[in-house]
Image (cartoon, rainbow, N blue to C red; front, top):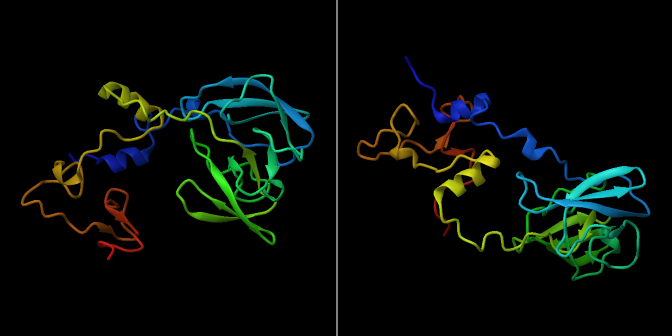
Length: 232
């Protein structure tokens, strides 16, 4: 009787490979419309997020965002103030150049999509017409609409990667909380029933580019790559 390979088992979506829903029960987005000011009513940790989270109360309810470095409970957060204070949620057109920001919206009103991980921040690089150019943590510049919103400051939790993970068990639980497959084994070193590249006879790895119409058990290696080979 045949055996399903890891890719097939993960794709089936059983509890063995599915992420814990409880870890991601907090939706990190600010509402489409914000006015006036709010207050931080709670700071807490979440297993599914690297940065600590903040629960902010405003006139129409509450919402969750990644906390910034130095945030305290009871702090007031402004949504339309001209003052450049840490934690304020403002449109990019109202933020001066060289200001550090995080949790940037991809499109106006989507609630924040970019830069939510601990210790990260971007910098307003330049403003040309209705476009705002932001220098991302990857040192690449990205263009945003001037009405996209962001939080002023740096995401809290910096230094989380400075302390080494000494024990394999701790690494196991870190990866498990995010449903990551760990430890990763080289495909060539697997048995033939565990991976299409398995069975290390002569270590002849089959084609690494999966076909477009390949089934889930065969779609391994390079999935629709833009290019292959070493850059010259």
